[in-house]
Image 1 (cartoon, rainbow, N blue to C red):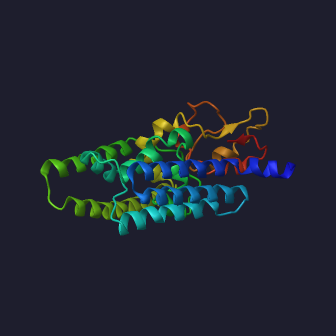
Image 2: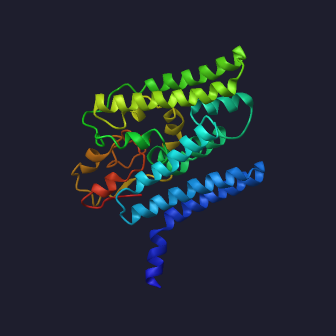
Image 3: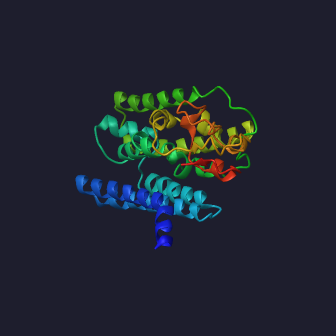
Length: 281
């Protein structure tokens, strides 16, 4: 009985995560009368829950498996095969149309409301751009963080203006333009992301300075329920957690105002590296 209780406690988080996504899946299926949403969010929820469970079992490439399972689904199936623009331009496009579906639902769940619960978990486990960037050799930043994060806001504004211009000019074949903007946008993101990673010796440079999605993610992530905390009584101030963090988060500090606190992608590298086991969720 004791072993069963320990096992239940051990896998409580991935189980709760799976149930949350199932609840979203069923709710959207019934509300919108579209079984696609049942499949979509069930699949993502199962992938995320299994990934966390694999991590708990110390499977080395647990997060990478989830990144590719979800990332390729979003990129290849939704983006290329189903021709849904899942970039931020797709979000603006459906908002201009006044339609609550596809990219709008995705952004609300994963990038606007979702971060209140799981912070920047999207960036760590589902982003199809980051899934490739994380394979590059600079998993730990080699240099201090640059003060050029303002670029992301410029990209954010440009994406809005691009879609706005399409509607103002009333261009024909707008859906075809949206599809090709998704393809071209991803090619540019990968090229820029890889180039920055090697130039700045930091796999996550694109996420820190360029990615417009973080404009949505950062505000809610400040209040996230799921965050890495430090038991100050156990902490020996060795600094190893800061050295391995790909996003330069000061996880030693428990304050929500800690340096780069809204940048945590829940990769748990700091928890794994902590010799005193003072870091926890």
